[in-house]
Image (cartoon, rainbow, N blue to C red):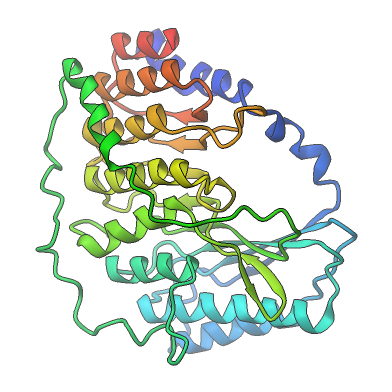
Length: 369
């Protein structure tokens, strides 16, 4: 390992973190009234039915006393990873959990303008690309009001013939970096979002869908993730304000590739057109997805380069954190990210490119940026 390779996983992270936004720097002081709760049911293979696990999670959530000081914050970590849950079970669990929290806040009125931030650990289960798509749509408020949210899930898996990762083996030469401009024509806005500054009572802070196989996904998942990054409205149900689009998306070792990254890039660009920064993912963890490579990295870099930071006065980052560790990124991808950082310095607060194929040339380009 050369000196430059080592710097990619150490100095680069520190340098970009040092350039983090003022709002991030002051976050510690603003979260003095914070406490944490957890519901842990990972590796629960002994339950014969997933409905039993769902009932346990909901029951635990119902028994907890959620109360805060004025402006306080509760972090609720729900971990059901590696529990053999399928699409239907995961969707039911998330819906029932959020409904339980909503009803608790409504009935008790004990948050005092505080917020419950929910972290969902759903990794290492049996979710398919169709299930992931339906989950993303649910976060955005797309659901049938007359039937359950599962009524639209077909028993047949979405055909992969719509769009397969045909470009998994695609390579990008260093001299082709300027092709990132091709995404600029895809900035047609499809979301109508009005930023809300009132207190949001329930937020989904993080969703972890790591270590599940979404490779060979169809067009449905690509469209859903694009719309997710375009942003959505803050929902109000029974007088309770809820921001359900996760701020942090973790899909490590999940088999996604360049097409998935292009969809995310288009969503980021569209959100810039609609000023939908208040309610869209701001942190993306895609480590361990080797198919991403330079092609996927260039697509993400295009969005970072061309997108507009949400607040040019406080210099909030377009993306708070981007983890592309172990994604088979080479010099072309590194140079594309360097170009994005040079052109749009506040597009990214924290970048992880550790364990990739970047040589001294790519590292130097990032250093110059």
